Length: 356
Image 1 (cartoon, rainbow, N blue to C red):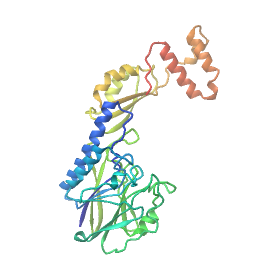
Image 2: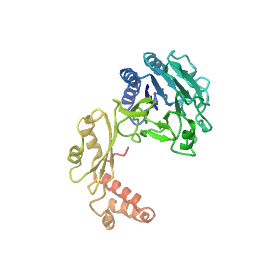
Image 3: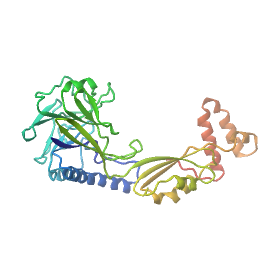
Image 4: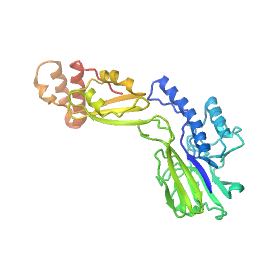
């Protein structure tokens, strides 16, 4: 029996550009701390293998202190570590993957699958690397040499898009491989265990959310490979979560938001979207009131007017002139000009408009 931990897409040194610089720096430090959490989990679970399926770094170069944190953490891992470079951190001259790594770490540096035999486990771990930011199908035509051993592979690639420039992987290729387990990276949402032929395959998603396209709980897979088959368990990690919350603003947007907030949001990063019919909400005032309850907060106004602004176009004054100018163009894009009218009138009537 073999126990393993499968992680991918740490994207160390991500810019976290949507956060203020001080909080972006905190997030990058937390990424480095995540490495120790992975190693601790691997050791606590008695894993034989730690499989890292690419994009450990967010770019082909890495900060020196980040590389040192990674290698220090992995050196302390009791498991054998296998890394397959991906499209963000491809293996090329000058790459951190060309440096000296701890003895318990194996980097797959070739753009063709190569094996590492683990005689004590009656197993072979295969892997291949991106050698540039794109890759053709690395698994095409691959078949294991000895099906009587356990065969695992760690690989970065796109198993969801047949025309992908990032190592497109098909169910047919997986089924024809003869592998027992294929540890994938690249797609940032966890897949659950999937099967093609006799091969179980999965991608765990990114290990830490970095934006509102990576919502909710993030983690890794703990796996067991035995003669009876392969089992996977998703294990959440402790990182901050990105969440999107839609709230009907009503007459009191602050109370409406507070009523829908779950407890203990101070650790997480939220986007709150106000909806429904309402007067234009004062987003800046709401942000001042609510920001202390979050690590990061953005507010969006997607409410609809409670009054017919266009009915005011025939009145006197600057507001009427403004609405008349927009009304003359409204037919080309009603939604756009309705929004422009609403924001413009809100500004004229003294509401602060926040858009970010």
